[in-house]
Image (cartoon, rainbow, N blue to C red; front, side, top):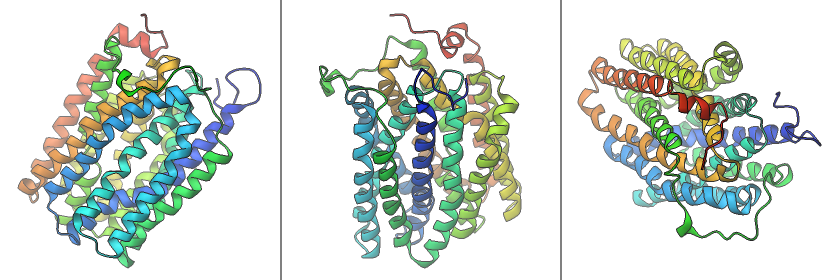
Length: 413
């Protein structure tokens, strides 16, 4: 079923939802991607923070996000999706505005770090709500296509955000963090005027935090979520660790690093749908494991040359791996979630991924100083991790029970 046709009778709601969430994803990524790319450089160059502390900061953002994701998923299921997404952009606006002021007026470093810590939790709830909205309004067969379109929109924003952020950083770091504050207001307007409720709130059920539970009885989902979170650990050096490596060992400028991330966004935008058609017949586990192999090879290739254009080509191939693996990861969680627990399932998955994936940054930034001038060893370690996880995903995905769940077979009580 096309994602541009109604799932049920009536008006073509799906078209509106996909377009609306794609638009908010573009706005959000355009504004926040520059902050995400530049903050490690700012902390290292201006505040003289060590690599290890920067890695721990990113880890703490994820730790703080855990209860927000879990409780947020529950609240999304209980009071409805729209009520949640209308509250979040103003909060993010205030946080980014405060961060830009803290940088402008040279506030103490702990103040800057604390403000940044609390941006990620609200972003995680937004991601959960958007994923649930799309899952509510797509068919099983159209879901990967819908999530792919949202990825394309987000990565178009990612193509421009870091590049512009690199330019702004040369003028003033304050402007880098003011941009996502302003973008949040535009994002808020889309939610207000376009996004309608996809699940009517059940007023008879209260939101009681102590009732929040992990779906321990759903062992297939729990195992799959942990394994996918482990894949995030494998690919997690794509981000702050790579940024710090390139800026410190290869002496890339903030502008060059911004261009590198722009290439990533452009490749997603141009090749995501063609890649879907090319590997569309692959099962979700096989797509994810193939994507991890792409990551492994391209990570290793970083160690072969410090030439800027070589790195850009390598990042383009790394992004192909991202195109292969990312849509089925998000889609697979929606396939496995009962319709009345989608917020909970996406929230639990967010907890796993937010716990494990930042450990990759801690791991990478911790060993980077020891192998900074031995790139073959450093990226060889990262290559090995990705290959091992690719094999785990492939063999776990061969199980019949998981195949049934990913085919849409309902969970038996």
